[in-house]
Image (cartoon, rainbow, N blue to C red; front, side, top):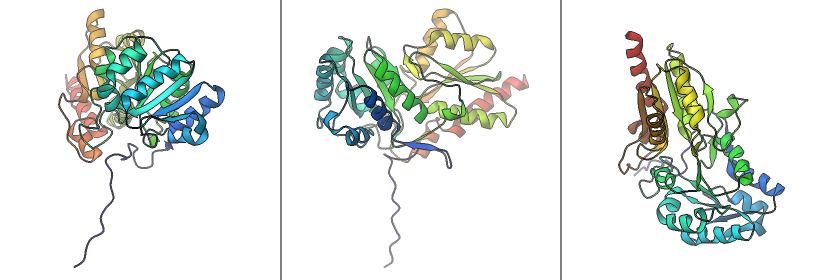
Length: 336
């Protein structure tokens, strides 16, 4: 009996990079090492997930400043709070589902209420693993947006992560960052004027046919979709909003008002409930700005397990799905 070789695949570590796209391995880990060289107060802490949050890079460089807390996320957050009280700057890492679901009250009471200088860096945001609801943090921003004093950052690529890590280290107060780990695509190198700044959105591309306001990996998808639509004569703007809270209301409103006839799409790797889309929608309603408005995000349901490309297509957050969504609407506008 002849057996076929078994293909080795992993839903956990599937790359988000397109073929041939440049990547950086463990951008957070390496950026944290750089930040720690300049500030001896920085320590790294994890709940048994150093390898899977790229904190192992820091642990190798600074073993005396690395703390393995075991599989106890509540303890991790409480210990991070204690370290911050003693004047350290703890970067604590785990998965987004564990921080938001298991450790919420400890983050709220021990860290956020006291405005302690703890940086919570969490891998597997949204639909970046195919392992199913136990690991898919599809509602983490909705959970954390209601927490006072907590800054929320959703970087789109390795460039964003590198710059955000340094910005977080310099920022006084608690921050939650949705981490893309492993070999992370480099997208923002294409825009040499881009600089990450907490609380700021940046226009990456201009276009009068539609505007995409995006965060996280969906900014990468938005740029790819805009390029493909340009080949069809459709011109789409992309506004990257890596900080979810505080939201850069001024820049978002200014960008929408530049071409008020454009339909606005908010694209996020998160449930359509409670994330960037609803945050922007509330901003528009509260300021009396009423463009045609759409959301591109994950449905309000527990998602399936499977291969990431299949799941991204199924739930409408792949590049081709975005192209199809925008092209149909722009074509209708051009026809009229």
